[in-house]
Length: 144
Image (cartoon, rainbow, N blue to C red; front, side, top):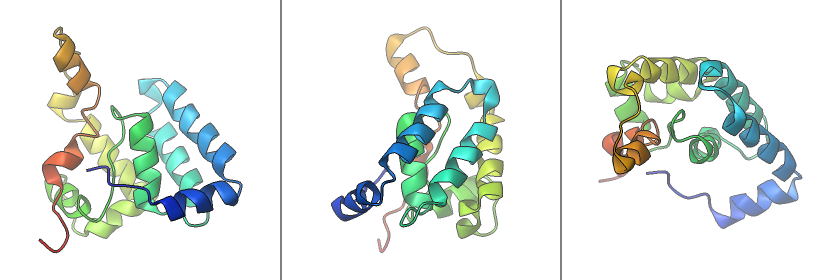
């Protein structure tokens, strides 16, 4: 679940003058070649984390929305599942840039990720979101 970015936070980002910086950062990831990942990913992640009021959940949501083929959202409902699936001992450790990089590298190394694009249009659409869709499989509602 990509979750939501609350209206209050959205206003804070815009009012703090971050809109242009966020836009440039996100657009760099959109334009990047697949071969440039995860370097581009981590540079963008760090840039967003350096902004006031932007934490790992917001940063990864923005990036995942821009490149669902290359990013996965880290949030309270997905961290634990991602940590279990990709052998990280501490779910919150995934939020650190070096660990998020390691997570992305492990995702990119998966056989299902490296498969060529399918021929079927619907399957191509799904494949184009394969990293982001991990969130749906590992998400656990908090307090459930």
